[in-house]
Amino acid sequence: MGIKPSYIKTIGTALLTTQKENFSNSFDANKQQLAASASIDSKRVRNRVAGYITRKINTKRHP
Image (cartoon, rainbow, N blue to C red; front, side):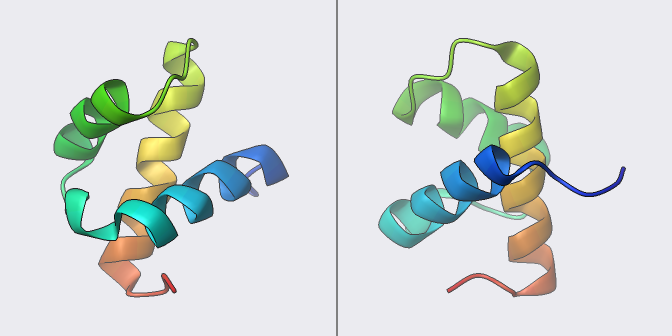
């Protein structure tokens, strides 16, 4: 897709540092976890954060 906005990176990084064990390498599982744990009203933003988290886990670039 392209360069992610800074708010997507900020939310994703914060969630990975606090709840790393709750996320997996599956986009659909991460989407469900975000719906349960974070209060993101927009479906588009939730999906973009889930994609960012999935990509970080799959490439092992998370803190």
